[in-house]
Amino acid sequence: MSVKITGLDVISRYLKEQATDSDIKRVILQNTSEMQNKAQRKAAVDTGNMRRMIEMDIRDNGFTGIVKASAGYSGYVEWGTRFMTAQPFMRPSFNSQIIQLEKDMKRLMK
Image (cartoon, rainbow, N blue to C red; front, side, top):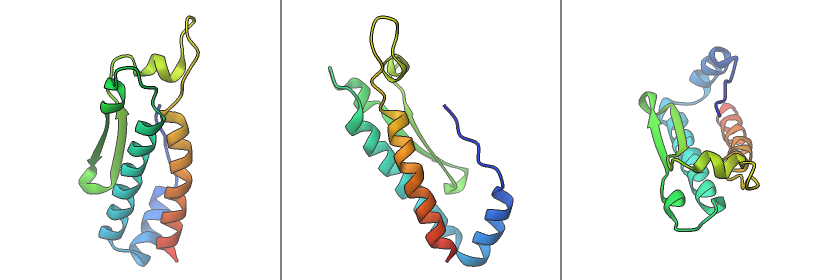
């Protein structure tokens, strides 16, 4: 699953006028960490391996946050198979965290 946000050039220009790079990086780090925690809490647990393998990575000098489930079977749990129903944990975590990220970024623009 990937997300593409358009209009970043306008947002970026406006943010540079209102907030510092360190403010933006702090918001990205905080929201990435919160999403990782949410995904770990929502993940189905059998042995705990999948929960432990939900990882966070910060890239692009702090401007990009990535949360991924690295266990090879994570996609089967997230989306289900013909033999088992889906037990989503990444999508609900993302959907709730993107709302918080938007609020935090709007707060920086004020």
